[in-house]
Length: 200
Image (cartoon, rainbow, N blue to C red):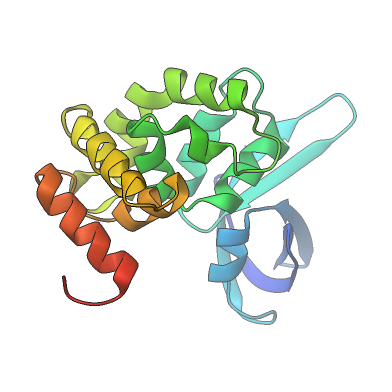
């Protein structure tokens, strides 16, 4: 029904943003990542939207990028991932980081998002690994994202980094945005550079 909203940002807090479009103010539930990207109230903003229809309410969800919106729609297609859990996941991880996590099968990292237990995390990985590597990751990560062919290299790199003492979350975050077509050795080197904040 709504593709996007563009208007004056009235207010934003940790979970919602309100945009005035020609005198009608729309409240959108959104992610922390989107909140961080939005301008200050009073300025013009655009949100790509998803309308969740319930018997007793019409809830509008808004996202700063189309990539985040597409990942959200994919996430809530998983049994057990409702609208609020989808928001929690995309508040914990940026779209490119989430794509890396799912494509590499790192279910443990997903449990750091609110409302996601080990069983649900595993279900998300199993159901979305191919979808994310084939579509969402290609739209969100530089260089075409994480393909099915390169997911194995990402997984090996994450394992290597965790063996060095980094957490799954730190490893996946350090690999986010790195060209997934690199070799395992090159991925590790680039990730260590990101983690250390200096040239390796």
